[in-house]
Amino acid sequence: MSRTIAELLFGGKEEQETDYDQVYPPRALKAGALVSRFGPSPTGFLHIGGVFAALISQRLAQQTEGCFYLRIEDTDKRREVEGGVSSLIQALTHYGIHFDEGPIGLSKEIGRYGPYIQSQRAHIYRAMVRKLMEEGKAYPCFVSEEEIQEIRKSQEAKKVQTGYYGEWAVHRDLSFSEVADYLKEGRPYVIRLKANPLKPKLVFHDLIRGEVELPTNYQDIVLLKSGGLPTYHLAHVVDDHWMRTTHVIRGDEWLSSIPVHIQLFEYFGWTPPCYAHISPIMKEEGNSKRKLSKRKDPEAAVQYYQEKGVPEKSVIEYLLTLANSNYEQWRNEHAGANNKAFNVELHRMNSSGALFDLKKLMNISKDVIAGMKAEEVYQEAVAWAKTYDPPLAELLTEKKEYGLKIISIGRSGEKPRKDISQWSEIREIYGYFFDELFQKPDVKQDYPKNISAEDIAAITQKYIARFKDNEKNYSNEEWFEEIKEIAREIGFAPEMKLFKANKTLYRGHVGDISMVLRIAITGRGNTPDLYEVIQVLGHSKVRSRLKI
Ligand code: GLU
Image (cartoon, rainbow, N blue to C red):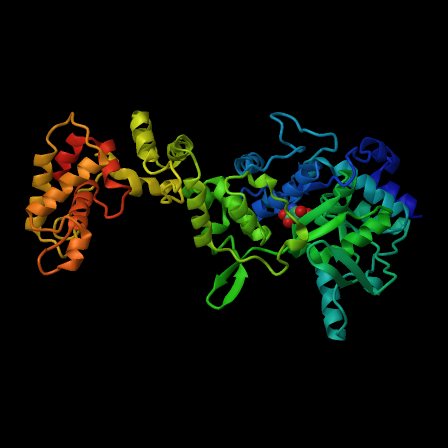
């Protein structure tokens, strides 16, 4: 009987399971190699948690010389955004997350386990559902949404479990002619699983959480929706089986669906993959923790980091600290090493949700940028500015050599300068090198309060007089001797020690002179070494800025 219903619904014979076994044979990989995947919906929004999950999956495949593929889960057409797939691939590629297989070629897919876009796999889902139906494990259900609500009300009144199951599943055993009549009437239908659980509980091993006990599934869940598209449950099981996934690493919102998934694998007669359910990234709010939210937290979106110009390397570096707590120690012991050499381990992942700390990310980013060569900093900053700050890009590229000199200050040597965490800070931190961006400080407001306007005028004038010669090259020591002279001339101590020993004798010290000059020349109280800044700016620009 069920065979004829299947024929009624699906027409003539479709491909049989044995065919798929030949189309998608077990992968020829070395022992222990892991096959993992990333399965985003093309909504156009990439959550930082998505990058996190993709990173973990990719690293595990890479570490074992396995395969990491991209599968587009586009069965919810309402959420789809045009260009969503390509922007997603582009963003992940920036983060160094590359796929071995998937819809990643310019015009075609790469890999032999496709199609990798779920909406193109309808024939496979239908064939698999048909198989279940022929074995009496699935059936068409014509019950309308209103009728489902009625069932629910009766269940609530009787204080029994709500849902579509057992004796409440009124279309479980429709006859061939009933189905034929409904079809003739043009009634919409879904295909449901006929759940007949044998045991009340399921004990399952999660690679992050260890042993988890869950109630077995008894609901006749939907497999194919009324438009013929699969539910997540069916698509997950069918795709991960035929794509020969060994490890499903996904968000823990799917943990409660595990009984459905395991049951489906069982009904199909397939071995389930290993599962690891990742807890969401959390955020501290007051004294409590909540999920990092797309709606409330701008830093949840990958776009946030792109707009601010936080290097992808920094984000990945930070995400690795969230993934495995031993990562930081590894980093300390392997400064400068490629983080791909670190072995990510699922059992070391936090099962209660890692806490997202933007300050820490930015601090890590300062280290990452400090570790880059000047040329790399320059290239990345320009690439960012071209999109997000074109006037700055123009200034930096107009005079490349000058731009490079600016970036190079304090960047070589044992302790490179740690000042920028994101490219958007360059305008503020280094903008004064360009007359177009320089903001003249205000004598009344921007200088230290203990230094009078007369002293400021005297210091700047004396500097101009001493450094008249554009051609003369001063060494750092020679330059500093001149600064000390200026201090002496206006009654400031030429050495800090002297000042400390006899505060009543001096109105200030040599450090005050540098500070006044620094502010007058750059408009900032905090800059790299002033001598080096002046070297880059050149004497004539410095003199013109000192004319107060
Ligand atoms: N499309 C699913 C999601 O975004 C994928 C889950 C999975 O990896 O199986 O949640």
